[in-house]
Amino acid sequence: MKIGTPKEIAEGESRVAMTPLSALDLQKLGFECCIESGAGEAAGFTDAAYAEAGVEVIKTAAGLWKAADIIAKVRAPNETELKRLNKSKTLISF
Image 1 (tube, rainbow, N blue to C red):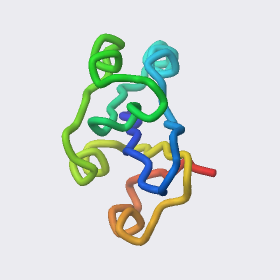
Image 2 (image 1 turned 180 degrees about the vertical axis):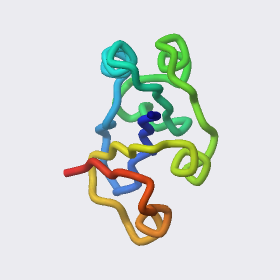
Image 3 (image 1 turned 120 degrees about the vertical axis):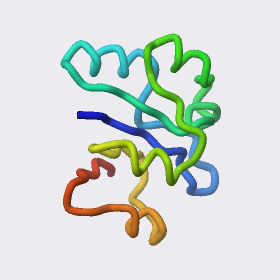
């Protein structure tokens, strides 16, 4: 199973649902991890830090939502994101 984290789109949101360290822990449990490019920037995490942790960096939000089985977000999804959900995906957010 692949866990993916998209970039938060709410104005002023600087948190990210997956850090490079948490990704390492998830990988130890057998999960693959992916993140949308730039998703960690506001929280101080570069794409390079994620890649170094073994996380697949995906260029677009649409690509991330398509690739991941489980989506981890800080904020609730907006309407566009809700349209990307289907019965085969699980969403985890506040």
